Image (cartoon, rainbow, N blue to C red; front, side, top):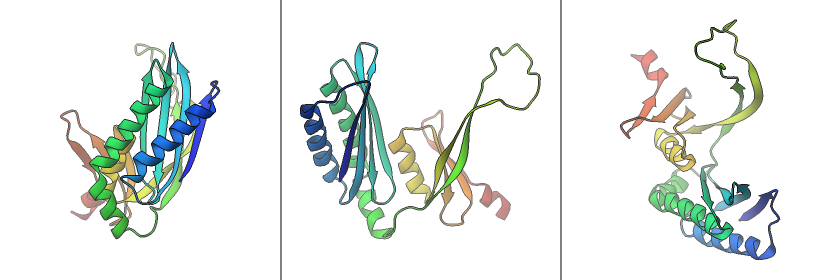
Length: 192
């Protein structure tokens, strides 16, 4: 497994790098037969530290975690614990996923934009055209609904757009206010 350890405005020493490599490798190999890459990034956050971790698996799924602490080792250990918990929770499904999907998950790039928010809600906008302040790309993966829910939980995000591999249409899974998961499938609407 390739492990990349970065520091944003922080010098990462050999002892921390060695601790990160040994710990993340041991944690991920317990639950995944073929991990591909791990990226760990440390940064300063106020008087403490922040650690952003992501582990890319051979199937295309990605487990992510962020943690904060006043001590850099504790910060990293909390993030690894969260990734390990995600992988442990989905261990059986990940192993089944490896058996049923010999090829990596397909993904295609789509443009993504960051739009400026209105400065005040009372002010009426001059036009309905949004102001684009950033342009980037995002990957939309071809997944089953179960895989999409698993990836959304790995990302700890409120929603995930994906291409439904059963029919090729775009779908969305999202976390509802009541704690359940919602699924939007416009293709099923067209079929009924």
